[in-house]
Length: 285
Length: 251
Image (cartoon, rainbow over all chains, first blue to last red; front, side):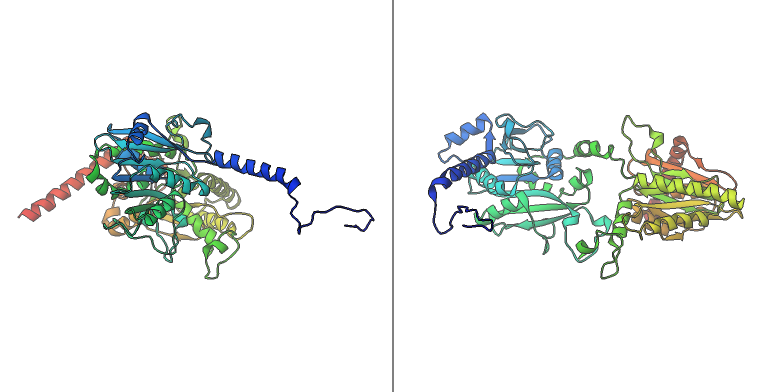
């Protein structure tokens, strides 16, 4: 190509594929993409007993009748206070993943420290078919599918029933009416079509949608016809809060059919989770 | 729809809302409850004490502040905003005394605070104050007054009112229970304030702070022992009421 100043530049023609120079670049691009993919891969790390039982079962799947997933600090706090407070739960695994907001890759094989955002699995000692998953770390959109596939890939689909608890800011709740303060926090539910029972609270109205891990799990259950019910709590508090956690109490009705729950101690445990943040907030008096 | 008209304070939405001001009123609801009662010879302010951190000096976390010898206020909402408003009000009280040689009337200082708040809802680059205030006191002629202001800059006189977290519940209680006989004496007015707070305060008397102004006297903060005594009295009265009702039912 001749330019205005008389110099001649050689330019690439888009009509012809020039493979030689591009090959290195492509290789490098591919290499970078592969590295990023590996870095962002989702790994499930099971404890030795569970890993052994996965191997022993022919299909590499765990027997599971009920899977309860808690997404978010309030939902996880509710499960910790009302369900996981007895001694009969064992930590059986965790999910290790890396993304810009959850940098857990440095400790793939070591379990996350308590209090760190993480994704943990617990199994009931007396009823090992009941699994609880507490997810407080951020899972990026591109990792959600992998997470769901890998977790559900370890579980037997037949006879499986899923409950998801999640929390969300009430500012995201779209409604034509004004939400007076006393109505918040509140629960809304969504079910997969295979789920037969009655939900314990009104269904989520249009045009509200779910995003993130709860949506990925529910979509998976809908596609694979697994009965699943989701309870989303809309709350006006950003940090873990005992009143928000108590809003999940109707879910205890379903859970008490599966495992024995400790009824009364929970209020103090709840306050323990919530009070750490209350005292430090001097913003409002 | 709210999303497009709620970022700037100086922008009305098509249906006439000033969303930033309304959001400021939501910030008020994050503060703990405060209740104000206007009696015959006494005005009472009661607040729900916030839980203080272990290493924090309790007396620096105050919701009730004196603006002058005869006027005091309780607020709910953003702590820092309250400090600024209180400082400006205190300066205005003294400035008024020096220029006019008279103490402020409760209505004057309330109007000053409300005007200040309104100014911040009408200029760009500033956000509204996120506090509501209950201002109580006695005028020179001995009339007791209770006023309430909110982030929009409006103020009204009240016989009894509540602001903050569970204000609606407390206000409903007051509407039912504020009668001439419930404020007949000073003690009764104080007990009414405590009863109203006990509706919403967890764990009873030790989370309540009370302040009173009597005619021609300055602000007095009640000690926790006095509050505990009054709470016990109230609980005893409640039990006696319940007993009487039971007896009536059985006969």
